[in-house]
Image 1: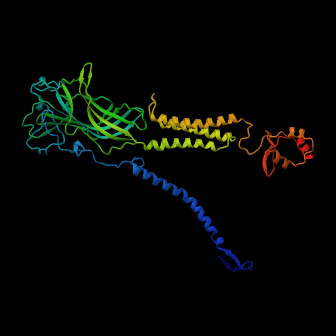
Image 2 (image 1 turned 120 degrees about the vertical axis):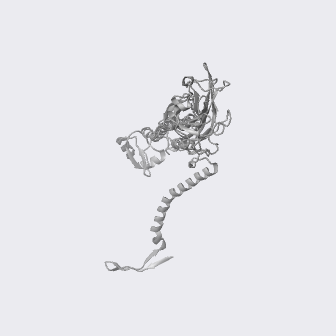
Image 3 (image 1 turned 90 degrees about the horizontal axis):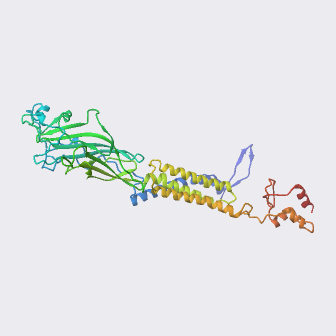
Length: 486
C-alpha cells in the first residue's frame, strides 16, 4: 500500500510533483530503533532468565548457596542467659544439680544482716585448707557441676587453626566445711564478694586447648559468686577464649571440622575431684551465631578424662561440628577455573598458522589458572597431604597444558612450510618452470596464477592480482620482466 502526498513550495518556492512514499520508508527509522532496543534487551532478558534458573535450583535442591540462613535472635533453649534466669537452686540430690529448672526463689527477708568472710569460715581458720577440695565424710571425691552458654563463635582461622568464642562459664560445688548461721543466712542465697574466692576453696579448672583467655571487666567485672543456705557455691564468669582446633583439610572445601573446648583440672586427680556436666541443661548455644563460610551442624558435650603419668585428671569438653558452605568456593574457585579451561579450548578453532594468537591464549590461560590456584588456598596452612581442591585445580591445569601441547605437536609434525588450510596448491618455483619451457608463455601472469597456484617466499613484496588475492612474490624484477615478455 502506498500513500501519495503533494508537497508544494517547500524549498526556494519550488514546486515538486507528488511524491510516492511507501509505508516501508516511513517505518524504516522506527524499525531500526526497535532493532537497537532489541539488542539491548537481549542481555537483560538473558540475565533475568539465568537468575530465575539459579533460584529454581536453590528452591528444588535446597543448596543454600545464594540465600543465607534466616537470622534469628533466639537461643536453642528457653534459658537464653544465666543472668536473666531465677537464681539456681540447691542440690536436688547428691549427683544431680540443675541451674535453670528451679522453683521460684523466695523473696529475701529484711531480717538478714550483713555477711562477712569470718561468718562463713570455720571458727578455727587454721583447720580450713583452701588448697584441698571439700571431701565428704565417706572420703568420696568432690563433684563440681559445669554449665556453658556459648554467646558467639567467630574469627575461625584455618591458617593458624584457631577460633574465638565468647562464653558464660558456671561452676557449682558444695563445701560442707563452711559455717553458716541462721541469723546471717535467712535468705535463700546471698551474693558474696568475689574476692572471697581467694580465701576459700575453688575448682582449679583451666581450658586445656586455649591459647589465651580474656576476662571482661567492662563496665564492671563480669563475674559473681552466690552462696546458698545449703553451703552450695555458684561462680559464674564471662570469658573470651582463643582456642586451638586441629583441622583436617583432606576434603577441603567439602570438609567438616570438629572443634572442642576442653575444661580440665590442673592439680587434682579423680580421687579428689570430678567434673560433671549439669544433668538438666549442660550447654546452651546461641542460635544467632552466623559464620561466614561455616555452619554449626552439631554441638554437644563429652567427657575427655585422660590418664597421665601422675594420674587421671578429670576433663569435660564442648564439641562443635562445623560444616563448610560451598557457595563461596563455587563462585570464586570452581566456576572461574572451569571457564579458564573452556577458554583454553578456543585455540582449537584458531588456524594453526596463527602462532602468536594460539600461544598467547594457552600461556595466559595457564598463568591465570596458577594464580587462581594460589588464591584459592591462600587461607590454608601449607600441608603436605593432597586436598580435594588440589585434585580439582591440578585437573584443570592438565587440561590447559594439554591444549597447549596439542598446538605444539601440530606445529611440529606439519612443519613450517606445510600449506596448512590456506586454499593454495604447492609452492611453485618460477625459475625452474621458466627454464623448462620450450615455447613462449602464452598466458598472462594472472592466468598463470590461476593455473599453477601461488608463489610464496619470505620476501615482503606484496601485490594484488588474480581476483584481488594478496600473495607474496619470490621473484625479482628481472624475472618478472622475462615472464611478461614471453
